[in-house]
Length: 113
Image 1 (cartoon, rainbow, N blue to C red):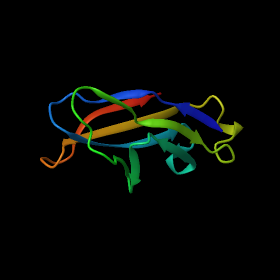
Image 2: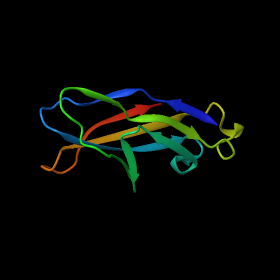
Image 3: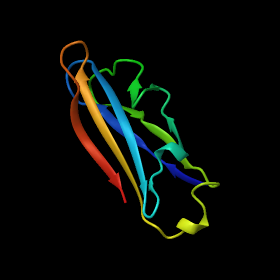
Image 4: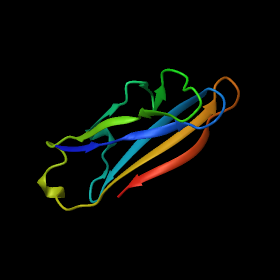
């Protein structure tokens, strides 16, 4: 089992309420996409809705910081010692929109190689 712990992320620097969603892609060298073999524990304000983790509340303006991901756990029975020292890449795609006004827009991607 591999645990990846995440930290706070500043969410809303605008002057209006916003909605945030994100998706996580995990790739392991020699194995490929391991997203289906992992457990992603989102922050308390996010719910899984198909492909995305969606904020369950509107985020107020003025630099509100929240926990986006608490933990990522890779299944040790599938991701075993055979893959030791292989490159693991975690990609998190964030999208945001002003609440009730516009469509989702990509704001950032974070890679953890």
